Length: 157
Image 1 (cartoon, rainbow, N blue to C red):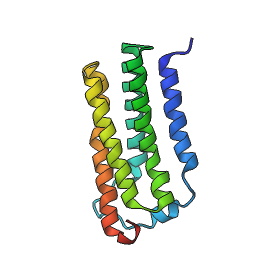
Image 2 (tube, rainbow, N blue to C red; image 1 turned 90 degrees about the horizontal axis):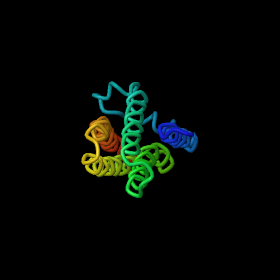
Image 3 (cartoon, rainbow, N blue to C red; image 1 turned 45 degrees about the vertical axis):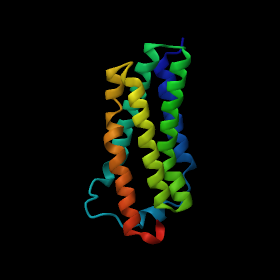
Image 4 (cartoon, rainbow, N blue to C red; image 1 turned 120 degrees about the vertical axis):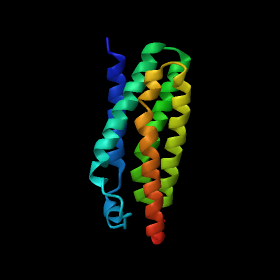
């Protein structure tokens, strides 16, 4: 029998991989944009998001194991998937549109989805909600950074 953590992990990996696959090969546009002077941690961002995705998948696993195969759990899994899709969509949409504002909107929407999920899972599992804390901390930083970049690069806002 396939374990729930295998399914959740595989879906998280496939969505993440698909996001890299559909990102247009125009990332040089993004690399040439001016960044805020305080943005000294850009090389750590892939590691940060990897940790956030692992925590999110672990949170989803806890919720699934609490009440497997129920309609409410399936709905929650759909919300986790929606959150990952919005998160992964940040780069391809922003790069394809060449719009930092689009990135800011997607980042802010991801934060709102994560807040809703956190509030929903808090009554089921404190640990599942706690595992979403890295997203809740990092997403506003990333969204604010993108917004700051739009101010520094008004032609690409």
